[in-house]
Image 1 (cartoon, rainbow over the protein chains, first blue to last red):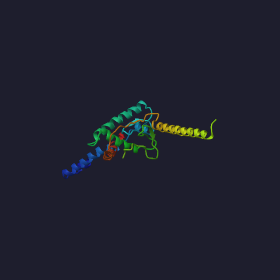
Image 2 (image 1 turned 120 degrees about the vertical axis):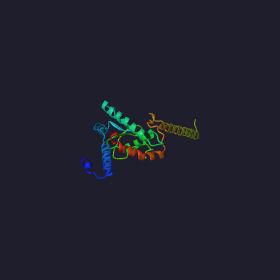
Image 3 (image 1 turned 30 degrees about the vertical axis):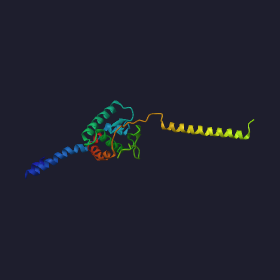
Image 4 (image 1 turned 60 degrees about the vertical axis):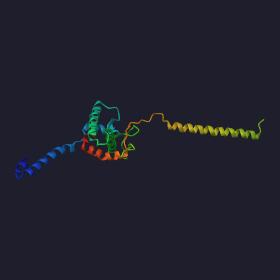
Length: 134
Length: 71
């Protein structure tokens, strides 16, 4: 902000700098946002896993804390799918394609649900996904 | 008293019956393979065409990137 005061010449430059500063302030937190540690731990421990429908599921019977984390994230995911579904597609379709990507992105040791409904632990190889996944 | 030819004929009939029975057992086996003891779970009843899958793939990747805290 002190830097901005020193620049007195021309409004457009100052406006541009403000715009850059505002953009950086907004963009940085979302780009930096990471999973909360409890969620990360539940994933790593195989308590929760990715389902083909684009939502999280319980790979083993959950503790109340794990249930709360999963419920919270699934509500936020549903909101993201609902607002993000492109025209001409349904929320379920968008969630499904996202789920394909999320299962592909699981790390070794994490759980995911195969198309037959069984929970699998991701290993070094490719995960078992729905045949319609891209 | 049974003649040699009659015995051979009876054995032939018996053999044929055995083949038919084995065939039926085999057939029954095939049918059993088609019906598993527990029902197939269809957990994702979603109707999506392949072209839509590919069209949505880029948007899905962007969504994951921009909302990394919930994925």
